[in-house]
Length: 92
Image (cartoon, rainbow, N blue to C red; front, side, top):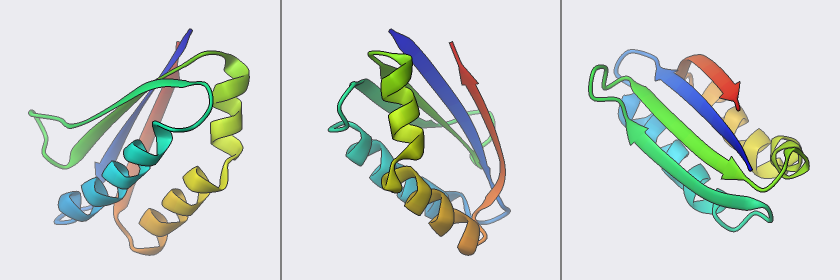
């Protein structure tokens, strides 16, 4: 099993809109082959930050998700709408 975490920091005043995009992404990820689970939470210390954690059967499943149109479309949307200030990712 492989886990992946991403911390997404919203631009000032855009945390709710970013959260909406991320909720849609998290729901859609649940049905991707190889996805074992997804959790999304707004960080209590900083409401502008969202933590997206996912678990995958294999490295290949995670790589397939990274290449999937679903992720690309979501990232395009948050960037075009100016919602995202920064993104940090970690796989373990």
